[in-house]
Length: 226
Image 1 (cartoon, rainbow, N blue to C red):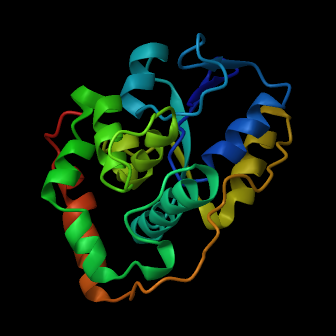
Image 2: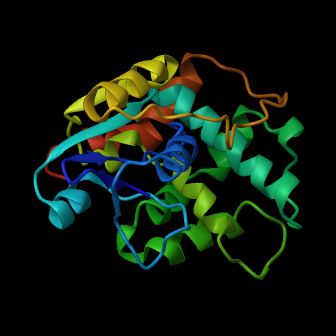
């Protein structure tokens, strides 16, 4: 979850942007941390920049960013890893057999609208998760939260820019920034990486346009309430 570091800097936790690795390193450090929800210390979830401002005030913020398409593909991989490798559920199609047509058909407008219906946050995630597994009424715990990784980075940044942003490909610059500012060197481990197993997805302009139109474009509207 997002943290306030040393009472002055808000770290925004964005899915599939090294969030678990950074969260773990922060908690293992000597930095003073305030968590968004102190009553839930060890549950990993994500809160938007606006929510953090409401809790801690309009302080400086820092986050890790990522190419939107790369993030989406990694999120998809992560969801199927979770279903096939970490749970007892059976996916509606094996990862190795997923192709473009399956994506277009499965992540239809109904799925996406439910995913983004934040007034029914947990219930919406569960409903989306159930569409991806064969079981009709499986016992859902925290597994359904994995579908939140499909949501645009822009949502978690509340359609703003963080005061300090570092691309995931240059995450060492984030580590240097924290050390320069607070004198604490974070040790980042490789946690929660996708397996990058092979599949039948063809990366082309059509797929990129579909991902943009389906998952990213809605957050281009400046008047959206997030």
